[in-house]
Amino acid sequence: MADQTCERLASGEGLQDALHLTPTMLFQTDEIDGLLQSISKSRDARYEQLMSTLLTMYLSHWRTPDLSKLNRVTISKARPHQEMHFSVDNIRAKGEYRLPTEEQLQSRFFPFVDKFVQYCHAEWPGKTTSQDDIDSQHQAELKDLASNRGPENWNQYGGWTSGPQPKATGHFRTQKLDEKWWLVDPSGRLFWSQGVTGGSAFADHEYRAA
Image (cartoon, rainbow, N blue to C red; front, top):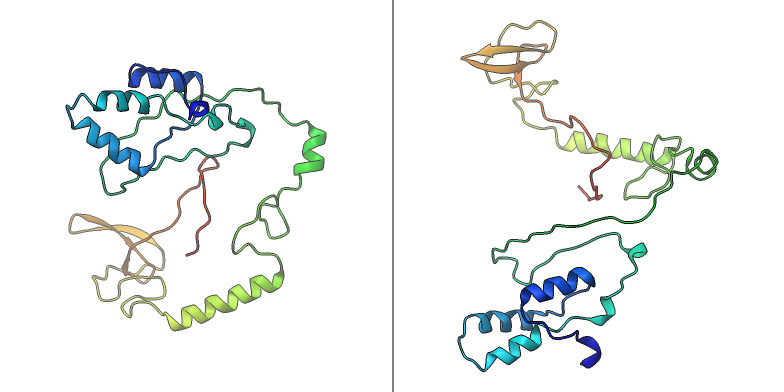
C-alpha cells in the first residue's frame, strides 16, 4: 500500500491541491463510495483515522499519464439514478501546434474526399465503397418505400389531405389560417416540414445505426 499512497492530507481541499499538482485517478470503487457515505453520516470518533487514511489514497500509476495518448475524458457515477452535480473547470491544453506545410498537405491530406464525395481519412458503418453499394442501397430504399407507404392521408408532397385546403397555386408557400402560420404544398394542402438545417465542423459526432 505504501507505494500507492501520497503524503498525508488534512482535508478534501488538500486532496484537490495534490491532484492539481499531480494529475491522477482517485482510488474509489463502489464499495469505498458506499463507505464514504456511511462515514459522512456518522459522528463516531473511530471513523476519523479511517477517513484520514482514505484521503491519502490514489493510484500512483496515474501520476504521470502519457498525454499524447489521451483523446477522451469520461465522467461516470456508480449510481446512475441518483442525482449528482459535477463541476469541471481549469482544463487547459498545453503544447506547440505547427500548421502543416503545403507539401505535407499535398502528400498526406489531399485529396480528402473520394469519388463518392466522402471523407477519405476515416471509416464508418455504411460508408459507400463502390457503385454496387449505391445500387444495393437504392434497391433497399425502394423496397422499404413500397412496404412502408406512410399515412393514407398524406399526398405526394406530404400534405395533409384530410385537413383544411387553401387555394392550390402550384407552388410551395406559407399562409396564415385561424391566426396560425402554415406551410402549404402546391396542391393547397397543409404540411409539416422536418429536416436538417445545418451542420457543424466542431461537433463531436459518433456514428450510430438507425
